[in-house]
Image (cartoon, rainbow, N blue to C red; front, side, top):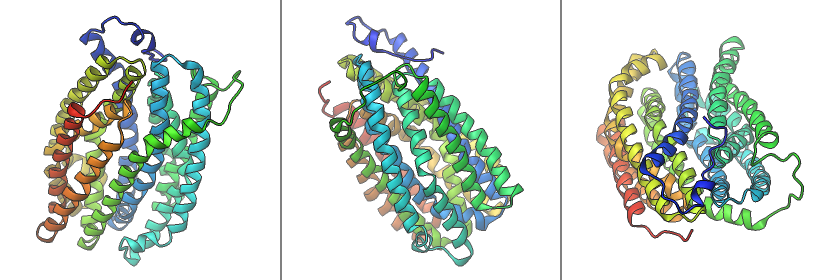
Length: 452
C-alpha cells in the first residue's frame, strides 16, 4: 500500500475516472480505516472482558458512566472534524503549501479545547454517578473510571486529530498501525493495572489512558517530523489563522451539538436502564460493546467517504463527489448487513468471552438480536454522514439526527420500557436506526450541494 494516497493529480485533470478505479479508491482507503476501527473496538472488548471477570458490580459501574465518557469523546472528535475536512479540501485542490499551517492551528485549538474539557469533566466527576442513579456499591468505581478518562482527554484528542489529518492527507496506513498498537498496549497495561497491581476498575481506565498517551506521542513524532504534507521540520512562517479556526468551528459545531446531544440521549437511556438493576445495566453495556463490532465496517468506510468526497470537492469534481458518495454508501450497507448477520449467530460466544454471568449473557443476547435487524440502514446513515461531511454539509444532517434520536428513540423507549424493560429500549433503538438511515439517504439524494 502506498505511504500516501493523494488524488489531487488525478482529480485536477478533466479526464474520466472509471467505475472500476473509483471502487479501487474506495477499498484502498476503507480497509485501513476499518482496521483502525477494529482496533478501537477491540479495546472496548478488552476492557469489558477484563472488568467483566471481576463481577457484575464492576461491569455495572463502567456501564453507568459509559454514555458520559461518550459525551466527552464525541466533543473531542467533533472539533477534529472541523479541521480534517479542511485538510481533505486542501489536498484535493493541490494546495499542499497550506497544510502545515492548518495543522499548527488545529493542534493549538484542539489541545486548548481538550484541556477545557479536562477541567469541566473533573469538576463534575464527584457528582456524576449520583446524577445517574449510582448505588453505594458502584459509586466509587464509576467515579474513578470517569475521572481518569477526563484526565486523559488531551491524549485522546491528539490521537483523534492526527489520525484524521493523516487519513485526509492520504495516509491511511499509519493510523491503522498505530490504532492496532494502541489495542495491544491496552491489553498489556490493563493486565498490569487490573490484575498485577489489583486496581480493578481504576486499572482499566489507567490502562486505556496509558495506551492513548503512548500512541499520541507516536502520532506526534510521525506527523510533525516524518509526514510529507504535515511535518513541521524545515517549515517557517507559522501563524495564527482566525479564518481557519472560524471555519473549523462552523463545520464542527453542528457535529458537536449532534454528538453531545446523541450522547446526552444515551445518558437519558442509562437513567431508564439504571432502575432495572445491575444485570440489565451490565447487559446493556455489553450488548452496546458487542454491537460496535458490527458497525466497525461502516465507520471505516465513512472515513474513506469523507476523504474521497472531500478531496473530490476540493478539486471541484462534482461528478466524483456524487459517485464516491453512493459507492461508499452501497458498500457500507452490504458490509454491515453481513456483519449483522454474523453477529446474530456469534453473539452467544462473544458474551461468553466477555462475562461469566449467565443471566447477563442471556439478556445481552436477547436485546442485541433485536437491534441487529437495523444494521443495513444503520450502515447507510453512518456512511452517508461521512460523505456529507466531506463536502462540508454538517448542519442539516446533524439536525435530522437529533430529531431521530430525541423524538423517535427516546419517546419510544419511554413508552416501551414500562412493559418490556430493557428489550423495549433496544426495540426502540432498532426502529430509530432504520428511520435515521432513511432520512440520511434522502439528504444525500435530495439535499442542496454546496459550491465546490
